[in-house]
Image (tube, rainbow, N blue to C red):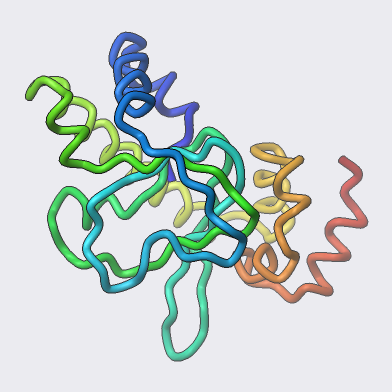
Length: 189
């Protein structure tokens, strides 16, 4: 859920370069097939991941219904950060919606490579960004129409969002697939 725009705009450039140099050093490349869950609801997280290419959805099931909280794409960092940093069970799952390639970064390896100051600074910035993303999603869900939210998705990742099954996008927007189809016909990207 952490976009590269945050890392480059809200973290000092030296810290951002340092962060990426570490994840490239410690990350273990893994292919994740469409439909495969990378983080399970109710489990403890020991890692975060960097998306080399592909797309993931974060979702939660309540009353036998799946609610999609968001998507992550190429160049994003994702994981269950509260679980990872607090050592608690996570309350959602993250699943590949396209065949994807990621770097899996174990937190213990990340911590071992960083100096204590850099580790503290980077994890603080990750959590601040995570909170910011969640706040923006709540505001967008309350104040934007489904069409406006879809346009924002397109602006962020138009080439990948076109490959994500319509069912997932419609569920994220809280609309039917038919309504999403009408919105897509209206928007010529």
